[in-house]
Image 1: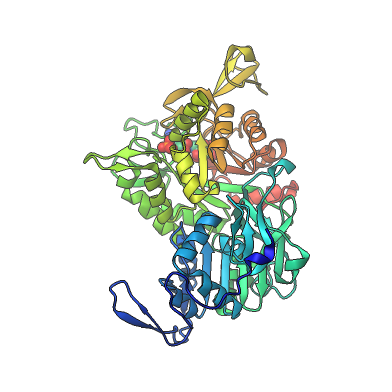
Image 2: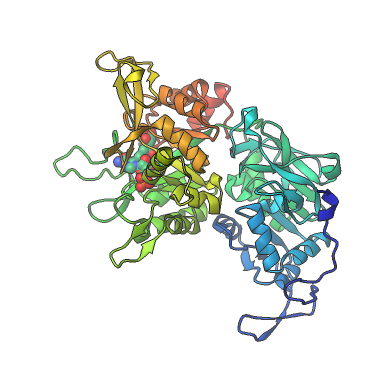
Length: 578
Ligand code: 1PR
């Protein structure tokens, strides 16, 4: 279809309200039908208007705005857009769904008008993509048509992993405004679709990023800004970008500028993981097992207590963790929505931690003692509302993969499918808990068996990796290789690959396993279990296609600081965010 068809030039009429609106002197009806006179924010410089159309989690954006000392006014009606002094539009979810909501709520015209009037605007992620003419996401779907170009999907056949998840470098053009001083730093991206530079949109582009190809990382024209990455999840650098937009200045950027080496490409991520559970006295604690056993080897046999979740997560953020994961390890038996402390932990953590937060444990359908049924989607939604950026599914993903491999049918009903459909596959991690089982001959098992670097106790040269559920308590008839491929098809955006044999041992990651799984899928794989020294991180990145490495024990016991891991990776020539 001709791109120009999508340009919005219609007069300022709201189709579904039939009200002509202008910024000043506007009246509209509130829900209770009383006539309200809309007023601009009266020049109150501490108020930011937020266009949250209710499609997903924008809690992180809210937290970042509040952290920077601003109040938030939510857009309820199109008039609120026109009355804004500055507007932030953190698009979340799918392109078509977002456009539908904007159209249904009569926001489209107001938004186009606001932007065409060159009023202070910041779009984030989908909030950038929607400015373009159309998107191929479940489409073509028509966008706002303010910038020439079509938003398309990254092409994984070129060898890149899709979604593009992680900290990547920006090539910033002169005069980019809010990105000045940010060149050479990593910022956090998480998306499968991107807009491409062209002659027609060149005058809009303020930064590009390379991921297999150069795509548009940010646009700027006058007061109109939009970024494909997530400033609210990009640590100090991201907060500085937001601060520049809000204040036209930034004190935070200076802190960062003194540092470090220039970012040049997608960094390998270092993730701090907090296994969380209630101890025997009812407190929610960070714990850590050896091969999944989290009880002390004492007479009392108590749950090992390594600290308070909110404090530790905050510390790891300050120490430079690229992501923080919480795994509610007894979620399989304790219903997470009954576990309010866990939701509180997420809420408090997300107020001060501005890197991605993943939470897992207990994401499944559940019927409580009173007969109330909760879907896994409701459980995940509660986690997202409390501050999670991604959810991680363990046991339930195994059942879904088994059913899919048995029937060959995608029912669309599994937790994995439902959550990725609503929140996007980049928001869904599948956590695999495999155990190594040695065999003499790969033909002895129906699952993928590989030659292992270190033979088994009886000299076995091969092993397969059996998936488990319920925190490693029950082995299932499916291998890690088969599971990874199945969950990718069902909509997982990333794989967290644990290994029960290596967990807590400090002898390094299971390189054979990580290689097997990271070569089998085209989504990012996080290597987990066994880190004991900085060299283990460089080894897993050098020998496998892992996109990230996760550790718990060495960080909790303060044996290896996160920054030492990063410095070591840089010395070894592996891109890392510092
Ligand atoms: O099945 O959807 O309820 O999810 C439960 C989640 O809890 C899964 O992600 C599962 O991995 C996790 N889990 C369950 N039981 C345990 C346990 O330890 N008893 N923890 C457990 C898994 C493994 C890692 C660990 C790394 C790194 N923890 O995430 O943090 O092995 O440790 P290390 O660096 O100290 O070696 P569901």
